[in-house]
Image 1 (spheres, rainbow, N blue to C red):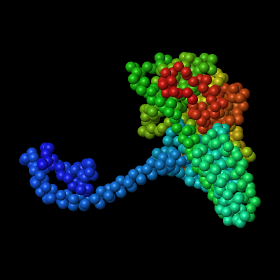
Image 2 (cartoon, helix red, strand yellow):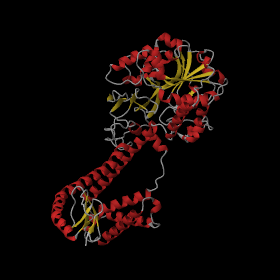
Image 3 (cartoon, rainbow, N blue to C red):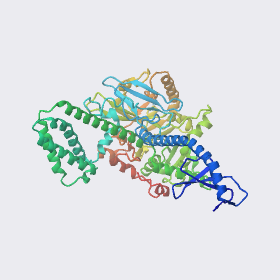
Length: 638
């Protein structure tokens, strides 16, 4: 009998053993292994039985020894592979959870306010550090800013460090911490959007089970309580069985109410017994600690997710911006407006919007044009950054606004071409700050909006203009603004709405040692009528940069430099022109909202976000274009 060899491969049969390098193995019928040695050539095509036995006797021990030597290495490799798999599984669970909870260093939770201090985050790339501002005594204001998705990294963003915020308990607990101070606007949002629990009965069953388990060890030890202990044990087993199969109330059996009533009776009987309180107290303390920890975990997680929803751009709006950018570069020619001569013509009404939010700014423009008596006399100057410039251009080329002229400016290109200092800053449209008064009962929270750094380049941006109206992109115009345009500023630089619910004296800890009247009201930047000639005459931009220079020398961050730059240069506008608070206040009267000339959605809950206040969103959505193909493709429907 002979074994036939194919090409240069010789097959040998041995017992079970690990294989040396250079061999392949396969399991065959009897549990033996076929070893295939590669590269061993023979001259003859047929090997006799005697030759095969001789080779087996000669090479078999060598192969077996080599296999035995490699066995520990293979076992070690298995151990390493197992450890690596376990580590990978561990990090795949822990890392996403850490990111979700905001524990990663790049995601500090900034909506939670510490009672002892306000922390200020410098969002610039070369800083990124946290500073601490001591909070005010009773009667003053606590300040921190809201985070908007359109704020650039160079703007000062006030936030709160997470590490100390949750050491004082949940909002509304026995320590008396305010929900607004603890969680900011998330607190009110969570109350307004509170959903009906689908597992309230399941939770009550769990509570009954935990209390019964805490009493059971003590009841068993008492003499004459055998019947009660049996009933308690039976009730515990019934509850465990129900909870093993139920997640929500709908999963519970129909007779679960009977079991709950029996358990209540059993627990009431156990409480009447003279039991040792130590074990019961220990178990109930465990229940309390577990409940508090669970509530704390969900509060922190929900507040972080709320912040994430406020700070990030919705997917549909990102899709719209990308499609418009691609469409702009795919166009055969760069179509410009033919009425370019209007851009510097003083006979027209000139409106300026600083924005990186395409949909929001287009809604402000659309509402202004629709409610204008002479839309053809309006020129909009829309200042944006390089990232959004081409999407803005494409949108306003594709859409017309009743004869109004839309001029889109690239803020970064303007700095590069006209300022000549070699510095190109990012666009900073506006800043919002949340101010909470802790001296009043109930606590009052307000949101104020201030000019960003970029607005102080208005005289250079529009050197040929003498007057402009600056609108923020979270505003909706409901009336003709011709009266506002023709407003006599009486020698003042700016006409704006005063906000007397917050005064300079309440912000004295956050203002440098510039002279100011502590009883004066602050002002809001949602809509501002600006005389550029008076601006240049009073060197407002120079004053602003002097304040910034003084602020940079201070040990704390001062969030309101623009308030000081316009000291005694503001003419108050009638309050009826603007209705504030549509981005945070649920209590606004419907009549006041409807009568206002301009609606300002200041606050975190912007109308284009899912978190927006629903009852105010209809005033914004009525100006939403319905026939834009890209909006349909991207499912833009706030």
